[in-house]
Length: 454
Picture 1 (tube, helix red, strand yellow):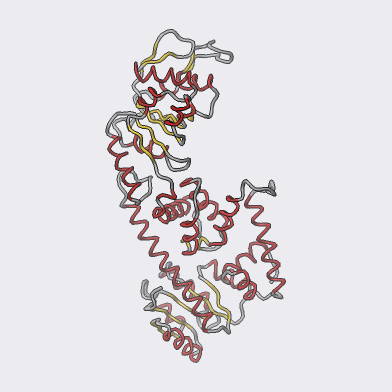
Picture 2 (cartoon, helix red, strand yellow; picture 1 turned 45 degrees about the vertical axis):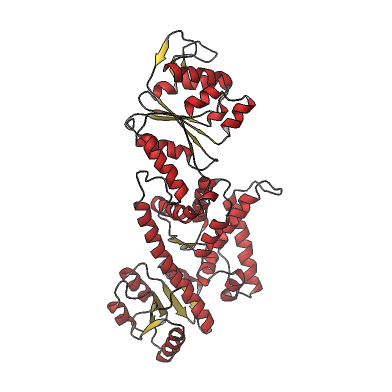
């Protein structure tokens, strides 16, 4: 944390202002004192301060008016509110209007410095988010694929080159690494980009239906075939067909597919005349196809036809430097879609994300961020929310799971937890928040959310 930060203190009590000035200046902060709240707002300029600390009860313009005036001029600057008479309703109004936190008078210097450090961290995170967004804008020709890891960028560079060559590509990698995303990017940057992109999951259908889906059928070819049907190969004519989970193809379908790749023609089920199409085949798998060949469950000749190039995507744990970039990308994406009030990711959250094993890879990370944003009641994605989400996922195979939706279970837990803390603290919100390890602003949000009595 940089100490040469500029802090504006607004309070009509000069003696109190001098005390704040002394504490903050002794800790390396540059402080400006203003006892006239209306003048402070009128003279405030965007970017002139890194933090504003204001009292609530002041003549002419009170703290809520100061908060609104400052935020109207600089929405990014954190504002820390001080009051000797905090109420739940007033705190909720302040937080709704954009206050970072509430500080109850009287307070110890260490408590003030702790809140100041937390508030300034938000400014740093906002700047980091801007830099990350700029990095996203500098990504190459695959704007929907996020990454800066060298190994991953090398894979994307190969994919860009392959996009221009009309050859079959096998995209391998663990579940959730983005195989279909890469396949779609290859199609979009190929000469076939204006034509259809069609995908089929080869493991999702029984053999007879899979054959019909791929190649089509004639009316009466089997029970239920009451009309002619074109298959996905015809639907993808002039475009690209992705065979997802290609390792699950039954042997009979493998043989039929191999013939198509050799002859560029196929027979609909129940038809005697061949059909010719011009389709680029891309395949994807999370299985070890070479091991399947050894075991006799996958044809070697088909493998060589499908895998003219084997493009392997690394697991997320092998590209951990991309986790912050991806997490912020998913945050920004959700904010655009749902106008979320969560503006950043706390540093302790990023530490949790970087340490997690991510067996579900990028898909799991996206799901965790999305769920966290749905649950989070503050303006920063917090460690308690993310830790609980990841703990639940890690215990999915264990016993004692209920049938409740996760959000319902979490809400029930939180309501009881915060109610017990208030009871143990005799209704003292500040003490209860300290026991919970959350700031006062977060605790007030929980009180409001669960209609608790303080």
